[in-house]
Length: 366
Image 1: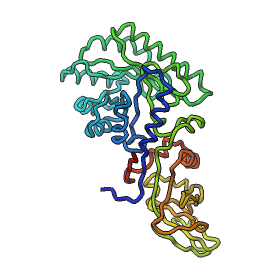
Image 2: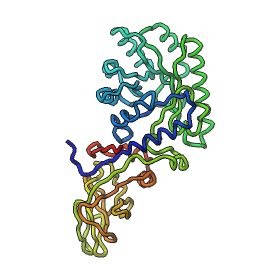
Image 3: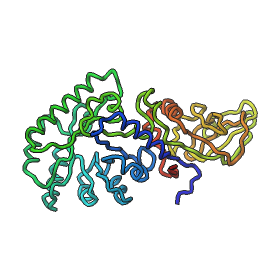
Image 4: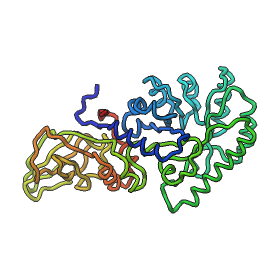
């Protein structure tokens, strides 16, 4: 039982708003895949999936165990596993998950499994590398791939997809359009020889915003569901979904010359009231936010973090505000605050929200 007083509150209505915002950008026939990997971008994947199950066509997770958790929670919507491993293929089949096959090693391993079972027209997804250079078959693999696919009735290609490398960057438009065109060429080759036409998809959140001409059959909405669009104006149209809240455990009066925290990093130059809050770098609050680089809100007022961030605690300067032990503390509850934290930590909002430890209790607000 998780009785940590610090909680991450997830706003279900905001997630629904964000999905609807992207939906209105799509053609009526364009399907939506909701990405719920990494605990739903640091939120709560099973609750998010239950919330969206009747509103999207697909879910995607990174690894098989994430998909199994959704199945065990009763989710029946198709689930694409983006980065399956050979040792997990039997579990993938057992739980009716759909693997992305991205090279011949895993392709051959799944075909062997499909033959042994045997499976009939088991849905798989073929991933092509068009420039991200992370996972995926090369365009030169297409003839061999088509030949192997035509030999087997054990699997059926549900979709062919790729991933854009810089869809949020206007300076990389030429490269991105090149990726889209290369993908379209690969798909054309497969369509000519496979005998049927799988779904195709390449757009992520930023792609939906910047390259509407490439919607194809389906789009993948990830970070956009959770309030960010990698674009200031678009993010302003979305609603914040993650709010991190805690309480004041103790208040100290620090005298001039006394210090706060590890390495005595904060030295009081005058009488200072410090409040200790039960959250630290083990919970996802980076040490880079210490020593007045970061702040929290208490009674609607920003107060700076003083001293080094501890593993389980932070201390803040509350000298200028009225507050008491037990009062609520807001670590963040708005995209701008999350973006500020990410900037101070020299990272991106993706990392800030997915870094929140699983020992922090999740509370979904409907």
